[in-house]
Image 1 (cartoon, rainbow, N blue to C red):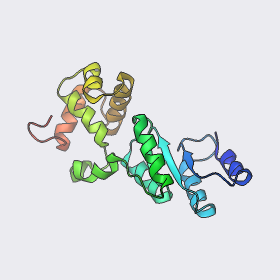
Image 2 (cartoon, one colour):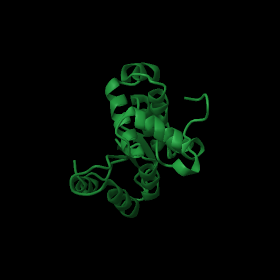
Image 3 (cartoon, helix red, strand yellow):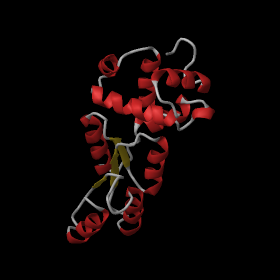
Image 4 (spheres, one colour):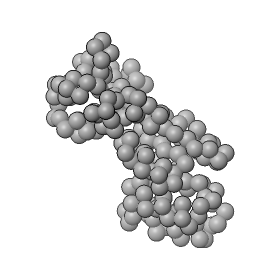
Length: 177
């Protein structure tokens, strides 16, 4: 529930074999706790589960010592895959990080995740949230959250502005969206 509690538990229960950490803690930032874990408990693997799909946050988490990063809107199978990979001593890179630089032109690198781009493509095609949810296999609530994050990242207020901004940034080639 907090960074202080995590530190106490690590002392009281040395048999802990994995830390699953949310970046949003009430008393400390998750990145600071990751650094603490790396420095004070280097043998203890840590993974992040976060609402943030920001490539910058993902890269920062790995730089701070995370062995995996799972976005909260991911399917449960992604969490299990990451947990098992980390327990095997592996690093589990999220697909958004693997494709981030290849997906976006230089002017937009790091602006939107791969999953956000999938949603934006369908928004630009005029699809409703319900249709987007169906086509991407997501909950409608997840689609709404991604659209809000897309609008914030693009600094726009509506779908029309998002379409214009996507075209200005060259996010989609002709015929792709």
